[in-house]
Image (cartoon, rainbow, N blue to C red):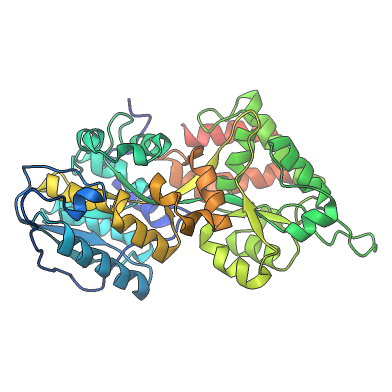
Amino acid sequence: MKKGFIRKQTMAIVLAALMAGGALAGCSSGSKEATAVATETTTAGTQTTSEKEGQVPSGDIKPCTIKFRYWADNTDYSQLMQDIIKKFNDENGKGITVVGEESPWDGGAYSENLFNAKMGGGDIDCATWKLTSTPLFVNNDLLADLTPKINAWDKKADIDDNIYDIMKEAGDMERIYVMPWNIQVLYVYYRPSIFKKAGIEVPKTYEEFLQAIEKCTMDTDGDGKTDVYGFGMRGAKGGQEPWGSFVYGRGGSLEDLTTPEAIQGMQDFIDIYKKGYVPPTATSDGFSEIIANFQSGLTAMTIHHTGSSKEMEKVFGEDVSAFAFPAGKGQWTSMGDTETVIFESCENKEAAFEWVSYLAAGEGQKMWCEGTGNVPVSKSIQETDFFQNNRFMKASIDGQKFAGIIPILDTTTEWISTLWPNTVSQALTGSTTAEECMKTLQAGLYQ
C-alpha cells in the first residue's frame, strides 16, 4: 500500500521537492557531450568481462544502443563518466553500446526536464536518479519494475538488503524501480584532541554519545565562558536529518513522531540546547555554520558525510575522525542517494540492466566511487583497501545498514523547508514542549 505517496495531480509539489531535494547528497554523473564508442565482441564460449563484473548473462541480448542520461557535478566527473562508458562499451562483449547524454542538474530541474521528456515520448532508455523523483514517475507508469531482474542477478547479495528496502519505500512499497548506485551516509565528525582533553573515548552507545556532548563542552581558559561546545547542532533547514538520529536513539521512529520514545528523543535535542552544550546560534545554524564552527574549533562534534571530509583533513590533518551514530534503543542515520533507473519504454531492458548493474557492482561502481569519493553500495568494493583505509568511508559503511530517508510524501517539501525548522526552533527556545512539537511535526508530515 502507498502511504500518501505523490499522485499525478500533485506534480507541482513534487517538482518543488525535486528542486529542493536532499540536503544531504551532492549530485553525481556525467559527460558534457554524447558519448558512443563501438564495442568488440568476444569469442563465443569465453567468459566476458561483463560476466566477471557481476552483470546478468542473458541469451536474449542482441547488439543494440542504450541511451543514457545523467548529470555531472564538475568536468572531472564528466570525464570520469565518459571513461566508464568507454570501458563498458569496449569490454561488455555483447554488442551493447551505451550513448551518454549529459544534462545539467540545475538545482533539481534535471528531474523536471527528464519527466517532461519521457511524458513527451523521449527515447531515453535509462538515467541517473534521485529517490524523490520516484513516486511521480511510478504513478505515471514511466519506470520499469526491476524486481525480477534484481532477484535473478548473481550480484544481488553484494548490496545490503537495507538499500533495497529504501528503494522499495521510495516506489510503491512492494517493487524495486530504482537500481542502487552510490550513497552518502551521515556520520559524526569528532576531534580526537578534544576527546583526549575531555578524557573520553569514542562513544559506543547513544547514552555515551549524550555524555560525550556534555563532557566536550569546556571552558578551556578558565574565564568562565564556554570555549568549546560539545556538538554542532543544525537547527535550520536540513537539520531534520541529524535530528532523526536522536529520535531513533531513544527507540522512536519517523513513522510515528508522537510515541513516548520519539518525544524523549526530541527532549534530548532540546536539553543539549538548553544546557548550553551547543552554540547559542544553533536554532538558525545551517550547513555552512555547523561546518565553520567545527573547523574553527568551536565545536567538538558535528554531523555530515564524506562530501566535507577532504576539507576537514586539509584543516586538521590527523586531528579529525568520524564514527557512525551509535545505537540506543534504536539506531538510524540519514542517507543521501544517487541511483539509476530503466524506463518502461526501453526496448532493450536486458541490455540496459547490463549497464546499470555494471554501475552498481561492476568496474563502473569501483571507478565512479573511487573517482568521486561517494560511498559504494557494493559490499565487495566497500571491502577493498581504498575504502577500508579511509576513516570517513569506514564510518559511512558502518552506518549503511541502519541508514534511511525522510518519508517521501506530498507534504515532505513544506515539512522540511518550513515546518520542521520553525517548530523545532520554538521547542528549543521554550515556546513549546517536546510533546507539542512532535504532535505538530506528525500532523504536518502525515496530514
